[in-house]
Image (cartoon, rainbow, N blue to C red; front, top):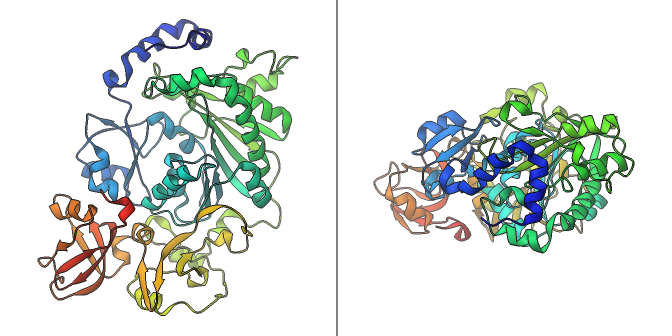
Length: 508
């Protein structure tokens, strides 16, 4: 691999005596190491070790996250039916660090500011367990569509997916979020080995181009964060200009912020992460030098190098905003509906009922459509119908946090869980609803084994002969189609034949 001379010069300064080991790891590349493909289990749907036993892949744990595994060998994990069931996300191991290092509590209001394609957002959603709110934003509308698909595939329900600039979000959500993750656009130096084509972009733009953009994004994020809230800043680059100097600019422009150790099970050094490098901050960024406190805080950031760990290059820093939550703001537990009554109603994975029985009363805007009333009789889980809204023939279950939040004029792709479409007196359930349900939460189910060739035919959109399955020969109506008990989508049964209702945009 031919690397820019300016870049290698900076890496020599960064790494000193470790430069040769790093360069050797770069020359080996991913094909030779074979250990930097990752699979992260969706804990909304499965327990990591349980799923590991079911999967036909060679997996070993990633140390810095409890639900991540190295995927070894050449298996095409994206073509297994469990992937279509949203049971896991394929993600580079180092990229799992930011979401793992941001402490999420049920009921939090969380923002993933640069979220597409959704690797980190899906993990944040899983850790919320259907409570609070996950706002996932990407300024690119096309990338935001991919983000939405991944969140819906994971079964995320309390979501707001937007395609806005951070500045525009501030006009709606200033001081609103408890936790914010910024995986900032960057020069991508840490991914040169995995994606050599990024070297060309570095030559055209480089760290200087991205540094200004990063400082602006971080500055706007500071406005979006509530007092006492946490912000996780990350990049996949090595540049001090884009990393430590971006953090320093926030510390100096917003004196109420401080850097904290990453919220991981072990200290960062235990995983092979290197500390931040305040000693390499330029005179341009700090003409008068750094104070001892600034140096100490910048060292709390973590640098990930491929010669030290099983992963690509990354940077992460966790910061907290000074202050306490406003007195009138609800606690995370109350926002999650964690009253004793609701705690008794916990469903799978500890949720307070399905689809957020919050314990708060909300008046319905309108009578729900007849088709929905008929369909919902097959649901075997609590659903707070006071949060259902009908827009242009489409039904949505809104998150509690958005019921009283003005988002008029905001460019969004989704608010809450899309339940389905009302067509006259009929209701057609959505793919998103299928993915948010568990097998036991719908009364009419057709369950296939992964080895059944009809599973792949279903994922390709074909009509299936299911006459051999229990109750299928004489049954009719909507069926939740599952593989090993995990939902894939919908079908409509009649006389032993299943009409395929798998979403066309997701078909294999």
